[in-house]
Image 1 (tube, helix red, strand yellow):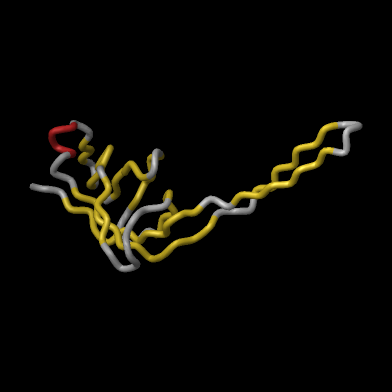
Image 2 (image 1 turned 60 degrees about the vertical axis):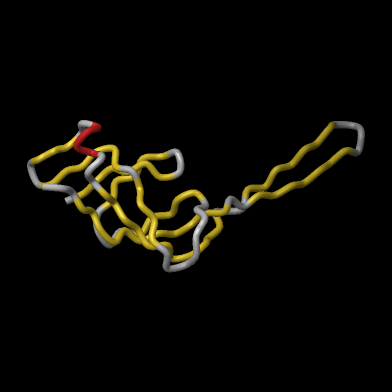
Length: 104
């Protein structure tokens, strides 16, 4: 059983006990988050209608905050002595999928 969920502007394929890295979420470590399902597959049965997807609940536990890779930005203008170096690391949240529950 797996589901496609919307997490931070992207769609992710998740199953129980998967660990995901999503955009930064508000919440403490150990708290529960519910993701909206876009598609749900249980064996041969595929659920994609919005009415039925409203009954599907994908819960996850927040494991902690992590940072993405360092991105270096360099601005340079020729013959003027202008150089500027910047860097950026995107904050992410690591979550573990604890349950996919669908109404029968």
